[in-house]
Image (cartoon, rainbow, N blue to C red; front, top):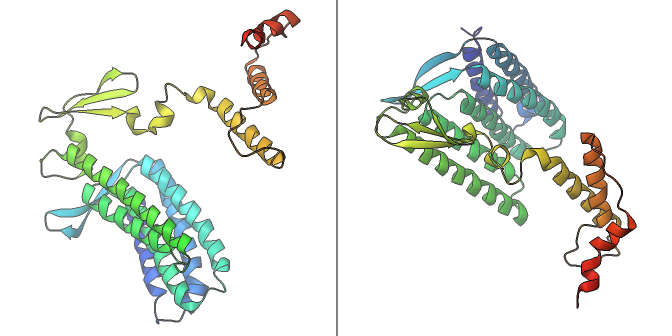
Length: 314
């Protein structure tokens, strides 16, 4: 069973939970957490990356666990997209776990055991978010991820700034959770089935493009859903007023302006300053050169004309 990507990924998530709990035993003794927990977590991350890579090339797999509520068992699914993100999660977590083994070498035992638990619960819950195939398991995993990461953020809770940052993170995470719940409620439509297959099947026809980057799905209960940019990041994929094609110009201007502020920090008075003309022209020149476009230099008469409004001003 463990040879399949889905079963293997499930075992890795369970292993992370087990490693986190094992770090608490015996209480107050961080020997296991210090010497074994993070290396074991790194090994589990490598295994997850391997299972994720395997899933990229295989058909989708599903599994129903005898857990959850009586009429709401946990449904798991792995497909090429989930496999890709599981591969990223496994790879990144393996590197972080190796680093953490040395970074926390001098951490006090009491705090280290809790950090070990919270960290591995966080990793396991992220894996379950990627494997979830129903709204119930997804929200359980999402909430577990939010709470475990919150406790990681406020490890140094004696500092007011840390507590404030932790509260802000928890607030944003739960605002996101509310938005997701509302989306699930709309997609569910009172049908009594929260599996993602049922939500996908709610659309009774292919989507209709009502305008660029907006698709309408007609549901079997007569309602319609408008999906923006097929679920991609809206401000990037649908930024018609500021498309991705010009973002390199924006980033270049921002970077050079920051450099200008750093270099001239002692000269500039507090306030709002316009972008220096030299920076504007340099960014424009580089952009045109990258596009293979050439322009003529301004003649003295043209420069005089451009400045004529100043001369005419009262």
